[in-house]
Length: 534
Image (cartoon, rainbow, N blue to C red):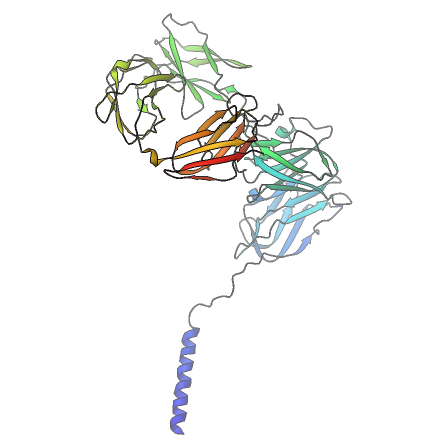
């Protein structure tokens, strides 16, 4: 019995020892908190009528924080000055809203917090909280909804503001530039759908903005815009689709300046293709000039010769209905050195031209000093063409797959506007095997011609383009292996380019359709796709 007692005591001590060891360490803390905070009280109460307070307090059952308030918060109608919401950047069990604006009579206001209110520990959001009140005797309860689309891209921007302007005696087309709307909401960052709530009955003008400055007014340089041509009548059972587009800037020439010897930079806003620069000052009989587009900025570079010893030159700049007279002060500056470079990489597709450009306008080419040689040291015949605005020489020649070529320019092959020429230049090129590319044959049904059909990357870069005026197979050949989208532009005015919209002219952008699937083009594969337009 004594032995049994001793053994039992030892067993008990061992169990106690293991129990103490097991209890050492960090407690698990239980399940992760995924519950959002809960509102316990609002002063004044949410959905109050006859509201006349200047301060609102909203209490929660736990500590909360406010994040991304500038992006998430929408106050409808907008207040001026804006309401102040605290605390920002620190934890609290309540939110304070201080109102400084003189509130409109008989108007329903809504603070839409989106997902900006989160608990302090796990950042669980209180989803889409709205604080609503009315300065009148009832809360307006009508609503409309719809979807935002991008006119050109396959996906719309996030945080798009959707706004209603009341069609009263103060309404004019310029109101979107000057005045905040009567009602506003946004699409946040997870959906292209919108809903405007707590509306009163009436007629409205519906506008959408990608409002980059968050000032609820349209700024052509910064914002995308979309609008419905017809007036919206509330109440309404309709759902509204709004296409967002970027306008082409209204043309304006900025003050030109001499940036190096005999080189003047003419900055511009808007469409430069019809920009005309005409010198008004008296110039010598041997005066010559050339204009090329700057590849990195919105500028045209005006080069001239010979040197002129005078204080200034006067120009007339015009573009359609725009005309301005501009003066350039002259001073002694060094001319830029001639730099010639290849636009292409070292690998050429079989259908691709070799392109040379330079920082000074080309004035002459001597083809006898240019040789294109294949891997067997055989000279290849070529043809050339010149694009003046881009200052590009394009060289077209027959190429074989999996071959190498050398383009050699001997001294004096190219001459610039100032009479300077090149030294010896050598460019080594190669072509891949046809099997290194994919091919696509596309047929289109239910089409209204003409169409611009583009192969674009998921980021919207155009890799290839076809123009078609009739039902016919469209072949995209030698495509680099990658993922692509098919974009079809309805070329309504038959000018062979995509035309965006214009708010003041009340023109919508040309219609665009995307093939419903992403194409995963692989090396050596031939694809046949049928696109049924709707």
